[in-house]
Length: 490
Image (tube, rainbow, N blue to C red; front, side, top):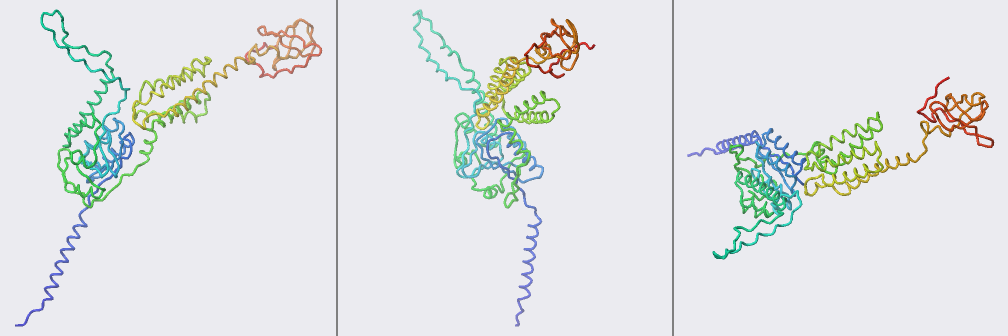
């Protein structure tokens, strides 16, 4: 029997396999890749960094991103900025994954709250999380003495009365009560986040009350975070297929081979970073006040006024985003007001010295937090205080010199000046002084064109005397030499 050739069947099989492979490839090309957004939170949590991450969450939600990864390395930050960011994460319509990275990074203090609020929290090796005790804004009071033990009751009939309870120690510092309130609030807040995300509730209390801190491996073991990933690519691989709850809707993450989109900082972030620096905001405020003062003394210059208004607005905007002490701000304003009053109505140092003292005290009290990076450096305060004091004492010195100098205006400024006799007279006549014609009186006869000296001014009449033989000629002053008195014209 003659066998049939096999090559037609082989060719058909190859064509079929090729078609299947092409179809699969076409489906892969047609299927859109998921997009994962990545934003960096590097440094202290403040108004600028919180604004950057919050806007990234909003933009990622509008772009229907698969997820948003916050790469975090922070020592902590401001409570208000942290709470604003946590609220944005809890209300996000996109899964938010906090990733403490790179190796050696930390999620301390405010970073712990952000990690707990995220839908998924991950850490890189050699990182740590914790130390979430709030930084006290009040000086710590002395530790109260423990209550003495209750004395044993005396036998009945002894006649000695026993107090039911030992008295409470007097002078319990109010700072202790405030510290307890702040700590209890922080504990409840972090525990509520732990319950919402199914994380370790007991450790949440421990990290706030005791400042507990754990390594990345311990954090995964104790259900503080969800994943341990060496890099971003490994994190996306581990996230693929995980389920998250977004506003009571369960979503399955598709992050394998996802396209990454990194959020870049823009001019708004850079501007906020600058003006929310306490030193910059403080300097803008002071420069703005000086600009308005300069415009007040030199009306019409416009440039100082424009510069002052812009600096004042920027400084005020920066300060209102920071935790400031309004008593300190009021002292600064009062101090500057006293310096301005010293310049307008010199008090020979009373208002000037008081203004400098109020200015320095207000500057020291201005920032209402002990967080590193949010305190006004003493050299900055000293520099502005010296400049303010220098201006005040310059004004004081000018006033003292003006008081000691010879008066050159009004009637006092006319005494001793020269005048020119316009006609021969004995007793009363006319003279020219300061470019004007005056009535004059003299005890001795005077000749026309003779130079005389003004002895006194009696209303609109000058009392004059001759210079005498051998006296040096006195030049008649110009019309602008003395002002404030006008003669009667004849």
